[in-house]
Length: 336
Image (tube, rainbow, N blue to C red; front, side):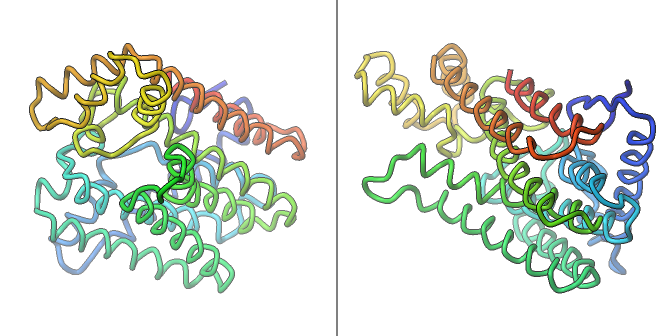
């Protein structure tokens, strides 16, 4: 048993391990090549987050999904580069929207070079992803375009908030399906599709990816409150400070509205106040870490991870399937 990829995923087969490691190494080289420019400053900015590292969660899923067809097919590695470039581009844009100071343990691009450079660098990465995608055929372009539309729609829905009368939790889960689930689903879809896997297998892996992606983001929500900056790679409470209603906060507000407990109402009022003050933010984090709403958010994470696990049931038993199942457990473990 060896360890590869995010969360210390263990692979129990040497041939699978070799395939995954070789694929991820090729993806890393592809990312560096795709982020080069004739303008040295653009190269520096575009490679800023590439060189900062990261879990490479989406490329890993591409490699594992490709095991259900020909993992050496020529489109597998480029499609993994596409999804990771797209993901990286969204991080540049997200950090501008959130005014985040830290990303992956280093200064965010907007902190280092300003918002304009960060936004334009994200656009540059989108352009490079599209260039690679064009060589993968019209079906790949269509799949990516649909996913990107869902991703942007999810971001807009998050910004706009739920419509009158809409349950905020349901709205938020729809947002996550678009913002995060769509690209994780495409990672699995590309891996299976590019490897020539049967269409039924492609569909199964796509459903798995969508559900795992939501679980992955819910785990991030928990980490934003429960972890320190060393563990998560970004400043704890970033979402709280920016007023972004993550699931633990939504579960708190739901409970406050239902039970009307004074301590819940007081915590909601604290979250509604100016959390720009570090001491006030720390007070909010401390209270949420001890609140039942955080445990409820953990249970929601487990539910989505179990849904992802169930989606894999039709697939034949193999080491790749075992690794995908273990990722479900790893996401849950990540949320504590």
